Amino acid sequence: MELWAIEYQLVNATPEYVFEWLKSNVIEKHTLGDESRDQLEHSLLSRNEKLINLGLALYGDVPSVGYSLFKSDDSNIKRAALSGRSVRPIFLDESWALNDDVI
Image (tube, rainbow, N blue to C red):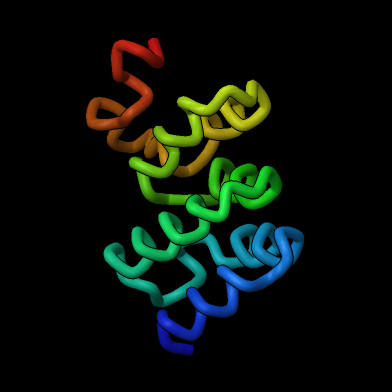
């Protein structure tokens, strides 16, 4: 399925469906490129739905989205973002988790 179709489907789907899609389509399991994943995650973040934000925090791969979620007022979302994929533990020296406001 092309990115525009996936994005259209997810932007208009229920939060429960989006959460399950994020959970079952982590970055290794699909063929979206980095730019496409970035665009998709930012589109989903703009929905500002609690369950979608939780899914992005846990299963999202885009560092700027993870950092945006960490800066939210919801402590559950903050913890999920810190344990999520966007932290990139392999490249921890380049991670958003090392910003002064996080540490």
